[in-house]
Length: 496
Image 1 (tube, rainbow, N blue to C red):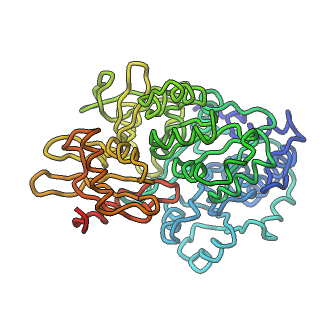
Image 2 (tube, helix red, strand yellow):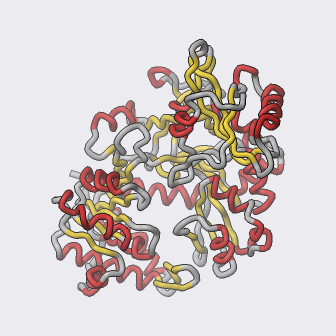
Image 3 (cartoon, helix red, strand yellow):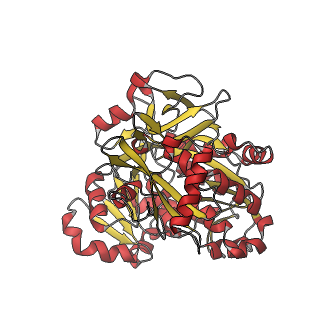
């Protein structure tokens, strides 16, 4: 049996910070400081004590269904302090989806905000295993901090579950990705050593929803600020006029990921924000930690005009192994396209109560990401697409991102997405869905985009049909929903 130690517990990171920087601000709401590291650590320990006194056992699941709030932070750490496993649930899910996750993980306690208390209360009878639903800010919640302080974080093993993250479920019911204390510690180490070092006094923004005006306002208050954004959010920020007069001297970095950052968009963001951009590539099964392109690496690619490097997602993060595989998991040589496989300390333990899916995803000791890409001779990874997004037309493979990159070169195109549509003769044909800038669109733009594609890529790759829409459908994380686009383009458009 493996040894259990308190030093493996993630809450030790907070305890250490409270010892080293007790008076430093740990949590603020907007411009208002809320907790120092010392007060936060004390509240976390008291809340953990309340959970233990109420009978929460090691490894039991504690769910959190809430929009962004300061209470979220202390409850997350309290779960770990008590030795429980946190299950953060996307607050934008439909109630039916949330009930499925709660039932599947077998949550014992559920912490909610006011909106989710109203949504779940009438249906709590459907969750007989849930013993307690606690609303943030309620008298019951505040009463948890009246308990005596727990002496120290619970002893755990590195492989003990700390977090269950449920995937989006685009290919069926969502799967619960089990991440251990060791996984999340390794993730933190990867970030500070391979993406962005965090120093005392730095600020990290966690916006409740992406609001460019809020970002600009907070930059006037907090120094050395960092935040994570999906590429679509970076694009919106860059095109927000007040950014030109924002306190960019207070902005340390914007780390983007979670979807493709097109080369032209990256160049525009660099021009607007300067050398403050960094990129990461990961997925729920290895969060944020497969490859990275730190600020200096990205800036170097921009300054040298190296579009190939700029279109990549960087190199493997510290301690991570990445290879490209073909059939039967055989490694492919540099420059060859295949599935991205990953191995390292951040890779999940498996899927909660789903041994078949776990075995398939972790076959032969490597995480099979489902992403298609290639590595160059210097280990820069360039993603092509998800394997399920690959278009096969007339026996030829077409990667949508390659076509999207060309379409975005046109100044009248704001956003573009490419999908395949069934074709009787060719198997599939390429269809582009375009968001045009104001005043552009229609048959004239279609003809111009056709000419651009013929000039830049092989004829068999160019779109055979175009749809011009007001906005691309996206999920809560800003990713384009290509399943919805395939439904949209199932029949030919009026403009051909």
